[in-house]
Length: 67
Image (spheres, one colour):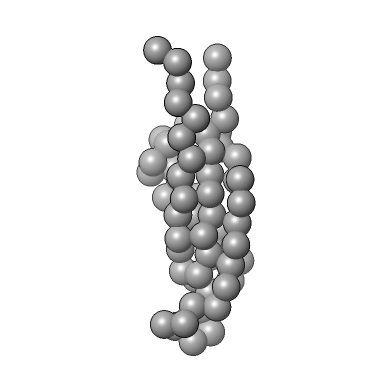
């Protein structure tokens, strides 16, 4: 069976770029698996209107095809 190049879009909230990145990678790991290699296709952050001082980011991941 040929692999399907799924893309995963996640939206996370945090107080810093590091928090956003860590939260996004946790979601990608949960979806693709802990040993999967992924590429970030796009990442966009903006202030979170529901939490003053916080940010929300939408990140799109794609698993790197293997074999």
